[in-house]
Image (cartoon, rainbow, N blue to C red; front, side):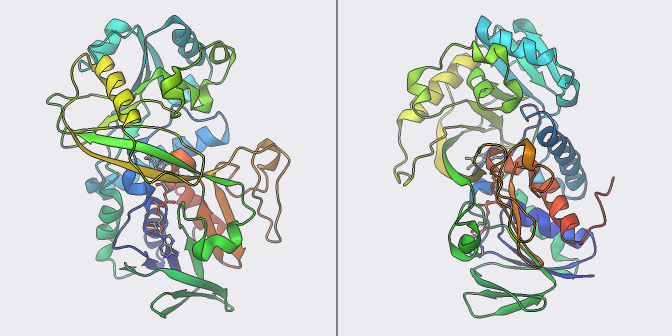
Length: 406
Ligand SMILES: Cc1cc2nc3c(=O)[nH]c(=O)nc-3n(C[C@H](O)[C@H](O)[C@H](O)COP(=O)(O)OP(=O)(O)OC[C@H]3O[C@@H](n4cnc5c(N)ncnc54)[C@H](O)[C@@H]3O)c2cc1C
């Protein structure tokens, strides 16, 4: 049994804590806020396998999907459901993209199937707008993001090997022979290993190790409605999402007509998932230029509402809340520009770095001091990948022999 300090109460920190306790270790979990407040509780809760890049990213997503089911078996309160998704297609050039994707060999791994317009409505009767076709993805799933971190903590509370301490901002981490973590109250935590999952805050205690990291931050607009009054049987995306997920790259995508300029100015795609109470979580935008605004701009909400009403063929229920969120993303960089540090990690991205990059160019994982692992930058796939990222970190840290199969 090892002593592990996990810093950060988001989904990454929570999953590292859960897997470590499951593996028999003793965990102290420190969070600067009262609970998770970052991207992990602001997201859609989409476990999104369908759009992942072929190769390592898809393999990680498939493994993550298995792990989410395993976590759900132990913690039903996370609200996991294997509801699949439909990307709704309204034009011929979009249909060409999904036809190309469905004809590829890896369509089976992604659980993809082409639907005609009638099949879209038969599968998800709430989509009574004018769908020409749909891309059904059976392996996509959903969880309840606002419930996951607390549900995971609650499940660990009775183990006797887990302590969650909110209101503890970690201010220092040192190599002390073991690992020494100091929080802002002055308390010192000695351990064998530490994992820093500090999210999109690229300064603070992790800042000194992130100064040269190719990370960027992305701001998204989100909203949630009152209950729809009917079931949305699958999660839903619009065809602009084809532009954001690497799986759809190919000749047909390059022939796709340019996006609507008003939406494009906000980096907009439509994603929609029904919450367990029947409300709809709807988003999003992709804004990259910092400093981010602090206003909650109305324009993206107006555009998103129009798109949803078009797909549903009915007015949207009243909006109950709006928010923005920021995630940390390992930025695309040229292959071969990897920056190898003394512990053999690399901060670069691309095929040529895959052998030494602990995050496979998909997220950032650096062993910043002996036994201290810094994990961030999974971008818009962090909710999806959190369990598999945790599993991989624990294996790298010597806290898990290899990926367990059940
Ligand atoms: C609007 C939005 C929608 C998204 N939708 C999806 C989706 O549907 N599917 C998907 O796969 N991904 C999605 N993502 C991405 C996903 O949410 C993130 O990648 C993921 O939540 C990152 O988790 P995290 O634990 O690293 O970060 P966070 O949730 O930000 O957690 C980091 C935590 O660390 C704490 N912390 C920071 N510094 C310290 C310190 N010094 N001491 C103590 N605590 C500290 C913070 O307070 C915070 O609670 C979305 C992101 C956003 C913003």
